[in-house]
Length: 203
Image 1 (cartoon, rainbow, N blue to C red):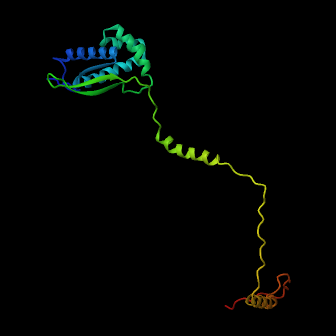
Image 2 (image 1 turned 90 degrees about the vertical axis):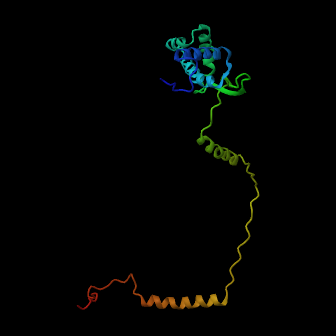
Image 3 (image 1 turned 135 degrees about the vertical axis):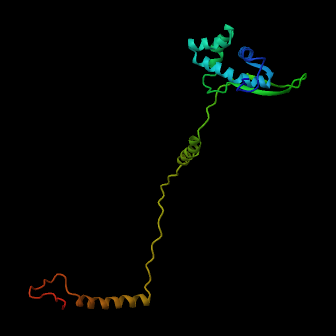
């Protein structure tokens, strides 16, 4: 025996189930909100959202596809002209299910299914969230007023370094050693005679 692929079976058979869901969808589009059992509301949600998707397309073929399920032309006209423009910016999620407790007679769980017709508020991406504080901090830093003053600050005069006796002795010894080093090193400007040959190492 075939089993339903989506949730519990409603009604006595598949044909009755299709008629039941079509009637529930028609009532939902007419009244914008209906109260039924939780099982029927969960089975109605994909059917109603598919019909709303057809209504958002708005062409003749989509209207004929909706007319296969909903026979009332007034409800179909209302779906295409009033409900579809309200959910044009919404990317799915056209219905909302709210549990309302249990029925008094058989204790069945009840729920209200309604159309979500509120305007959509676009979500900010993570990149814009990360860039927003940095962008807000940059103008804040540039908006700080800078005070302009005509007064020129005078720097304190640099004091001459006092020479110590040890420093004077070091300078004297450096000056005395300098001529001796110059005398030992050959002058770079003096040309070398061709007779003088560099010494070759003995083999």
